[in-house]
Amino acid sequence: MSEIEKRMQVCLDRLGVPLTVTWTPNNAASRHGEIKGNLLLIYDADAEEAWKTLFHEVLEHKFKQVTFVYRTIINSLIEAVEKVTYTRKEEFLEFLPKLWETVEKEKYKQKG
Image 1 (cartoon, rainbow, N blue to C red):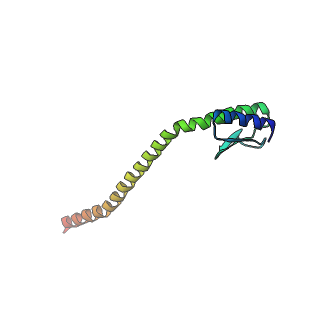
Image 2: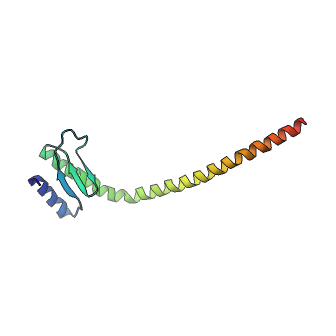
Image 3: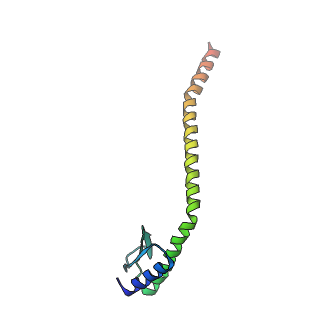
């Protein structure tokens, strides 16, 4: 573990953030850093940028805790709407043959 990683980890521990930081410089990475499970990965090669990424990722981690309630509510609403929509779609599909049959019967009654 590098000295920077140790100092970053001290920050996380002091703040009570339950993450383990790993600084693995990777210029080919498509992002500066990310959180996977309880692991905070920082890809910046430059130390100053790595500290900025640490700050950003910790803020994002804490913000997700704030928005968790909203995501849970929205996902529950989506699930409820999908159930209602499915039930109504099935009722509609069951209605179509009855509609066709009724219209056909009446159409031929008028001709005959």
